[in-house]
Amino acid sequence: MRRVDLIISGGTILTMDGSRRVLDKGALAVLDDRIVAVGHADEIAREYQAERHIHASGKVVMPGMIDAHAHAGHGLIKTMGMEQGNHWEEICNAAYTVGSTPEFWFAEARLAALERLRFGVTTGVSLLGGGDTIMRTDDVAYGSAHCEGVAAVGTRSVVAVGPTRPPHPRTYASWHDGKASERPVTFEEQFTVSRELMDLWHGRGRLKIALLTPVLRDEHQRDMSAADYEAAVAQTKAVRALSREAGVVFTQDGHWKGSVSRAEELGILGPDALLSHAIDITPEEIRIIADTGTRIAHNPSAIASILGRCPAIELIEAGTVVAIGSDATAPDRSADMFRHMQQCMHYHRTHFRDPSVLPPGKALEMVTIDAATALGLDRDLGSLEVGKKADIVVVDMKRPHLAPYQMPIFRLAYFANGNDVDTVVIDGQILLEGGRPLLTDLDDVVAEADRQARLLIERMGLGNMIGQPEGFFGHARYPKHQGDSQ
View 1 (spheres, rainbow, N blue to C red):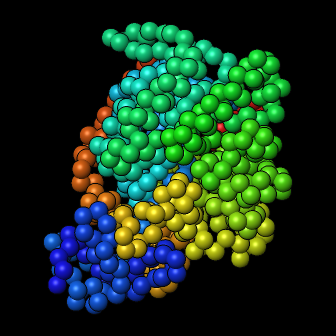
View 2: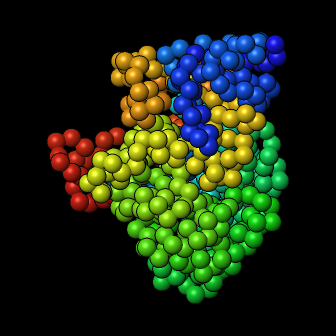
C-alpha cells in the first residue's frame, strides 16, 4: 500500500474535471500539496493508507472556490454610508488615501481572508482599494501589510495593484502618533510601488500580484483635460506593458459604455486580461472580447449589475471564459460564492424570462474551473484531478435546507450557503475543520478588525455614517435625494 498524507472518502466527489465526473461514495488521496488519486472509496482504500483520514459520508467534496473579483479594504467599512447619496464612495476615497494605516490593511486582510476561508473560497482576487479609482499604492507598507494578513490565514490571493486615474499628483497621508502627514503622490511613484510589491510578493507562498489601471470611458475623455487624458492613455499602456513583461494578470474594474472598444484601441486586451462588470456592452464588444480571448469577471450581486446588465450568457455562448466575482466585501454583499451563484442564475433567468438559462452545473464551473482559467491558474486549480493542487472543500449536506441526501450537486448549487462548509484544505493543509479555522484565532481577528474600524471612524470623523439614514424604515424606496451611487 502506498502511504499518503490525507484521504477524504465516502462523500460525493464533484471533480469538475474534463468529463465533469461526479463520484458517489468517492475518495481522493493527497500527498504533500498535490492530489495523487481520485476514484471510488473502495479503490482508494485498497491502494492507499493515510496519516489522516476524513470521513465525508453525507457530504459533498468539491474544488476550492475562486472569487474572480473583490476589494481589499472594504471589509472594515462595509455598509458605512452605503445608502446616503455618494457617501460610500467618498468614504472609500478618503479611507484609501488619507485615512488608513498599515494596521488597518493587515486587520482587514485577515478578516476578509478568514471570511473567504469560512465560506470555502480558497482563492480570490483582491484590488488594493476602492473601485478602479483609488489604490493604496503610495507606499509598499500598505500592500505588504495586506499580503501579510492574508498569509497569516493561509488562503490564496491575487492582489491587484496599480495607479489611480489622473490628474496626478494625488494627496495621500500617513499617520504617526495620531497625526496625519500629507504628501502629493505622482503616477511614477505609484508605478514604482506597484512594481516593488510585485517583486516582493508575486509567487511568495500562496500570493500572486496582478496589475491594474483605471478603465477609460467616453466620459473620461470628455471630462478630463486633453493633457490628463493623454497621460491616462500613456499610463495605461505602461502598466499593461509591465504586466506582459512580468507575466502577471492584468485587470480593470468597471467596464461599461463603450470602454471595451476603447480598450481594444489601446491594445490592452488578451487572454491575460480580466475585465470586471462589463455591463451594457454591445454585440460588437462581445465579439471583441471573444476574439481577443479576454476573460470576464461577472459580478451579479453588485450594484453595477442593477445599473446595467452584464451579458454573461451571450459572452459564454460566444466562447468567452466568464467567472463569477463577489465584488465583496461591501457595501451590501459578502464573500459567499454560493450566494453569488444563486444570484447569477436568478439574474439571467429573470432577464430572459426563461428558467432553463444558466444550468446549475455551469454556475458551479464559473466559481471553480472557469474562474481558475480566467486567472491562468487552471493547470493547478479549479478541479479535483491527479497532479493538481490539493485545494479541497467539504460541504456538510446534513442540514435541514439541504436534506434529504438526493441530487446533492443540484442542492449544493441551489440551496447551500457558505456556513455549510465544514472542512477546507489548501495545498494539502487542513485550514478549516468543523467550521473553525486552525491557523488563526477567530476572536482575535474579529476583535482587531473592530478596533481598527473604530480607529478609522475616529480619525475621519465618520460617526454620523454608521446609523440608519432617512427612509430606512416605513418606505418602499429611499427619498430621491438619497441616491444610488454604489
